[in-house]
Length: 149
Image 1 (cartoon, rainbow, N blue to C red):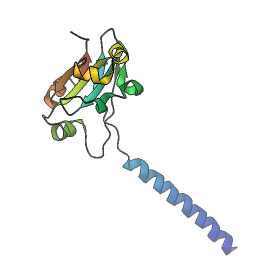
Image 2 (image 1 turned 180 degrees about the horizontal axis):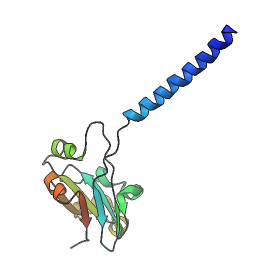
Image 3 (image 1 turned 90 degrees about the horizontal axis):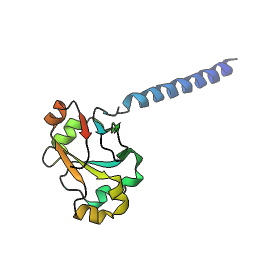
Image 4 (image 1 turned 60 degrees about the horizontal axis):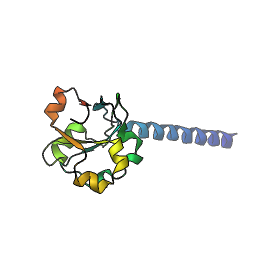
């Protein structure tokens, strides 16, 4: 009878430890910072890329058309998630960017289909907008793309 009780207690202990482990794992997960909103009010589908550099390079964008979350249809919007332990959008913009700005590069979907990335970059067939943290604060972290001017 005592042996059976020890086996049951060991099972209960394993379940209890497993439960504690699961709770610990979920409490240690970083929650994504989704306060940035990018809206596309143009008539075209666009791709976007967020960079801390003012220059776009081919390796930064050549897979954009394969990445569904960097595509925004006309009159749609998206909240890109920022997940990095202990950091947030403000910290990364102020500490990782060369000029303390978040640079948003927009590429028209038709342009991406027609040209290779080398030509898109060389001939600047994209639009770039830079935002300081204070600019994003004043916009309530909502960026709107209206189309090519």
